[in-house]
Length: 211
Image 1 (cartoon, helix red, strand yellow):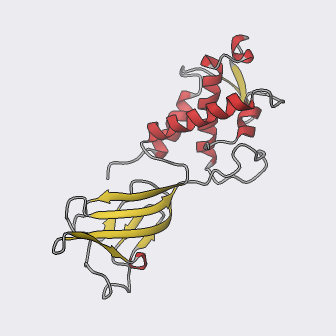
Image 2 (cartoon, rainbow, N blue to C red; image 1 turned 180 degrees about the vertical axis):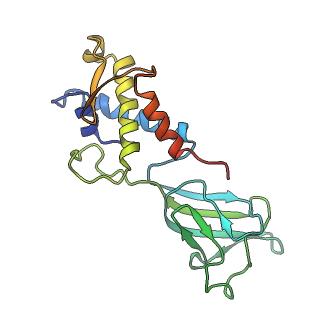
């Protein structure tokens, strides 16, 4: 799985055949992993199970991954029974796909607590978050793709950089250093005139903040 379509990378590198597809797929997967690391979060759609949190006696909690699409389960540590007790997900409001408000308005009389308790690691969340990457290796550029364009372009450029610098491909050996990106010819390198200013701008947009 990858955050950029194979067809976009092929177009960026001006490749009109499938001879290098396996290599390009591997590079896109590696670029996706690198992008996740640089952003300190997972942007591909993933199920996160029993993620631990500590409340601060407020109504707001920030899951570690977003956009949050499905809240599957919440458990809160009961200090009396010393066990995790399930709390209905209907008591939580997912706000803007990145914040959990508890109790949800209108559910205050049904919830176990009036806010998130401060018990260390006393809250467990299971949820689905991230962007769907279905058909990343088969979808055409003209097809719809759930990943935001700036993320997809950044990941494709990271993969293109690896293609040029270390893939061992025929094009890399020939010293090909220019590609077509958003209808403009750019240099694939790490310098100020290359891709890094664009990629760093995208990373800064999606990097995990310190709440």
